[in-house]
Image (cartoon, one colour):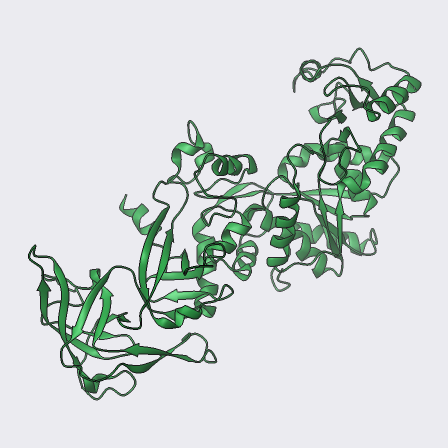
Length: 553
């Protein structure tokens, strides 16, 4: 989080609290529920929570909100920790809401003893019906008047497993006429006989979010509990609970959720995409998950830059994915190693080249003067892209055509003399002449050409699978379209090239490196499918081709 930029409203609140002596140090927390993988929306929350704590000399806790055993798994816990670390953040303490189950139970007992909570035998449908409407007050439950002694006994029996799921709940006794529907005697505990990923079968009652979250913040002495805007109505209950359990006065503040165009951000919807086979897994490179973006080749630096650019706001909005891609390009241009890879090969034979294969020199990254260089084999037979040759080219076609000349990157100028065809009239190879005096870096030919092509020498070329990823949805905001959001999945979001030809230096490609395939885009080794073969994922194109296509439409 940049200190040079103007303060956002969260920072202004913190600075005012420190100035008034409200807190001695700042403590924040990142509290994901381990029921799925983190996505780019969580990255904003991570950036904000860890960023403000660090800026003001405090610290951040990682706390797993594991109060719903039916949907939570250790797999998700581990993936979340990996993602936070990969983004470049370290938490001071690692906690689970389940660490506090005994304390939360005692807090609930404290509320019962104060006459501020009661056991309700009503069904969930009956409770919903008694809530009333935003313009009409709710109705008291027939069990609202139970004595403290009876409520204590029933709540203890709930914990002991005496009742089946749904038979009883514990509700706060607040105000059934409150203008805030959340405050109309909210449910604090429910019965759920389910195996918990940490506590096993020790518990069969579990706190609701509103019962678990505020006290957990208070136990950890969190000073600023940062939530998204949908929790604004919950803030009143947050404060009510902490006041009545007489605990550390944590306070909740809300910031806007940032949705991303051409994708969905709901864990429920993302899970549907996985379960229904629209993507292969949570870390499919088309997914907006942190693990998917990592597999696609996004860098933590680019994601942090994206979070910084969109900032913190008080109103939800849809952020153009083009901004994220811009941040990715900006960083990759600085760090990516340059390589030449031919996707759709057309053979070029240099008829006047009679020597052995020679080694030419190419820079690793022209943006980094300290990046060094690599050796590139050059010989009589080369591959170029088939699209880089036209037999009858239009005007301003600066690539190869009969009689035309181009420069081969890091190599020589060549002239096309003949296009060789098979019996069906298909071009099988080009016969060309190379200009020995035109070698890059020592050109004395005096020939000027406008086109430069990438290429690969045939005898030393290696093959690799290349996966070209595009946006997962065809529409900007699939969640707001009519019908099923899955109807808008882009069926052409993945194109696989089973055998592209690459310069041999890519044989030693590493997972932590990023590559720019010249004239093709930015690529990275796939982190799952590269054990027996080379598989490269396209991270992002060199330019925003999508925007151009949208304008054409």
